Image (cartoon, rainbow, N blue to C red; front, side, top):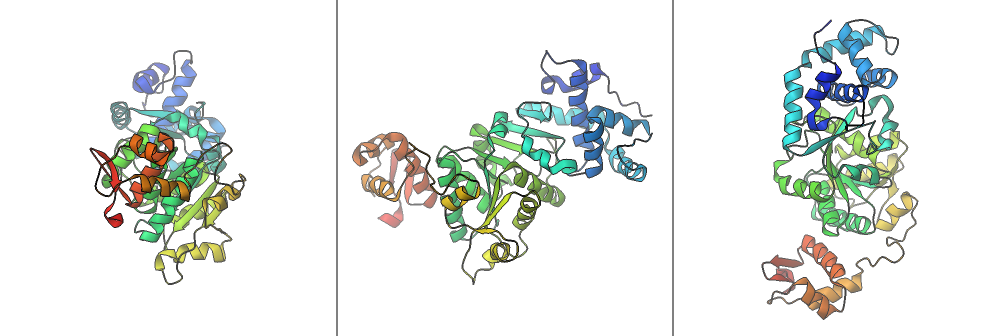
Length: 396
């Protein structure tokens, strides 16, 4: 038997700020610590570990592995192969380093024992995450049902970017959270649109949440963490790998009620997310593109071969998740085409005007004008500067 310490005192010492609250007992501390140990030992989606933990609990499962004995929870041969995968990674120093990184970055841990655990990921059964590391508002995880995954190509076309912006803005602005992977292209456009209208957006990363990936999206991911959440099932300090990207996609599909592929090539990774959504009986939609565009070949394939719903508007997506086709809930004043025109008319191509001045000129509430300005800025139709806003070069 290994000398790895799973005592309550060791668990509380290692957990520190990540530990249970004062009113939780020693068993809770050990269970939480065991979950952290497991996420250092396994790769995401390890079904052998998943079955062990579901049947025994994290602490008892870990003790069974450490003891070298057998358990009826999994086949003996599977358990032995699992030990050979897991035991080389068992390191108290690595776990301590991961927890220190989490504390330094303000990252918190969410396990199945916590009220913030998103229960829909348990639909993944043996492939469900052991725990989730969250930078930002952990309570956001409880507000993701319903929510929509907006995903697609990293090398998005201008058409794809535009559609992702429009769909995500309409959905997020009407109170439907947007989930995506924080990547370049469609993911980034969806996140930015949700932020621009003050909606909730959550990014699922393939590596640790203490460092942004891609690095070029550091500012975007920081902004997501400020108002929403950045989430991963691997501990802080973990590098994103191809396998972890593929497994991350199953979480995007499981967290959301519908996955919408905006733009995807024939072999795009977004099709992997779509596959997980279909396997989980989640709703699946795809946006059609030009028939001559290779960037839309995967989306067309989903519609033709896999029964994905053809999505041409936010209303289509709302119907997918059972909210009806109207993209505006009762009493909500979402930006309409005529409102956008009024805001454009209130701006000058040469003189900077702040949002309050533009609102006065347009005869609209300031908060509505600010939301529309955010969308216009994403489209490049307006420019923001120290003096406020003015029309972009295309309008001059």
